[in-house]
Amino acid sequence: MIYLTQLKERIPYFLPIASALTLVLTLPPFNLWPIVFVALIPFYIFIFSEKQFSNIFFGGIFFGLIFSSYLSVATLSGFKWIPDAYLFSTAINLLPIPIAIITSIITAFTWIYVFYLRKYTQNAFERSILFVGTFAIVEWMFSKILFGFNYGSLAYAGGHLEIVRLAGSLGGVFLITFFIVFINASLAETLLYTTAKK
Image (tube, rainbow, N blue to C red; front, side):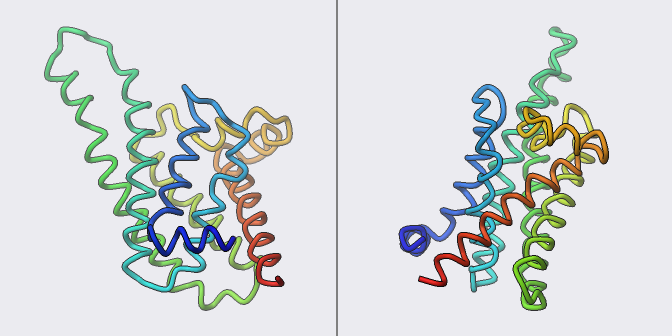
């Protein structure tokens, strides 16, 4: 934990960038799906330990930009229906740019909302629920931007486990998101608690 704090002081946005890149590794072609259960721990620590408003804003932008850019490109790369329709192909190839920008801004403002709300959270469970709910809402908004096509990034990564698929059968893709992010938040709170006691 001390190492993470020192690294965060040198590179203020290291934690959100590390979380976004780790989430990318859970998806194809990398498919390192087990790390989805720890990928958001650095971002959680960043959100609930950062003191500066501007750092939360830019940390949210970097997280959203990296993760949504990869998802947009991965999702839209399958649109090769008409090879000779150059305008259509160009539009599809350029579409990830506005999607990534819009999602980054939405993500940044959503985490600013969390930045202001966190002073009202009294315990680890409330902080975890605030983080989990916010992440699920951002993922839901991103799915709407992509028209729900080929979407469910955390559900895809976590869906290799039977218990996660059971959660999906009960409540759909976003219940899986809620479940996975809650595991991340719980582990982050455990890490924060154990390091605070030392």
